[in-house]
Image (cartoon, rainbow, N blue to C red):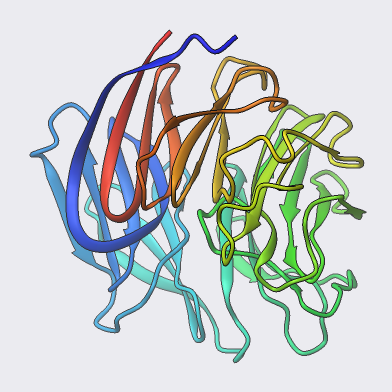
Length: 322
């Protein structure tokens, strides 16, 4: 069943930094992190790397996204500054600011080149709080979707938002762990309950990924009890409406990021937590721990056999042999 082995594992960046958001562009890994740091490492030649500071303030970034010309990043905590970084000269500017005290942006995601969404913890009214990027401008997204008390999300790996051509999904966590589904054509929002572990502020879905309009996977758990592995992985085959718990009691525990392998139509995927890297080759039903590497929070596929990981103080690249 599991025929992949690790061919090579190489660290390409060492730095005093915590990284929870990655993008791939121009054969480079781009990242944001603590202390306002933003930069890249060249995948062909890791000596070719650059890091800049986006602000004199010591901001913590856990988001990063891109369109054709720019990168975008938002710091956690208030005030939340929305940065736009030009891909040509890496000059940055603040294009939007949220000064509400409760602002805490967990994930930022482009559904297509003209449309992006970012999800924040709710204000005191407990309404779903989104900012949307349309026609080159950011604005707050008006809606009446109510969140439960203590329902929020985790800025763990910039991956509690996923999209297909037609839909965008947001995974919440905490006292409730639910799926919010936005129809990108008419902007209707549906909210679906899940059987995921939930009820405590540290529990719930931390990361989701979708292939097409129907197949989705979610991973998470409880970051205060990382070895616990009950009801912390689930999949959906109906676009997020219903979820089936997978590998409960038979996985490596708490995970912060899951990514479907490109070209696999959802069959193969990788997940990462603070204490493990795990792999599934049967649509998320069973999982095999392939590495005990610790301290990674986020992963991205570079191609069908290469994955980049980042987290505490480093970025590393793993090559798999199939």
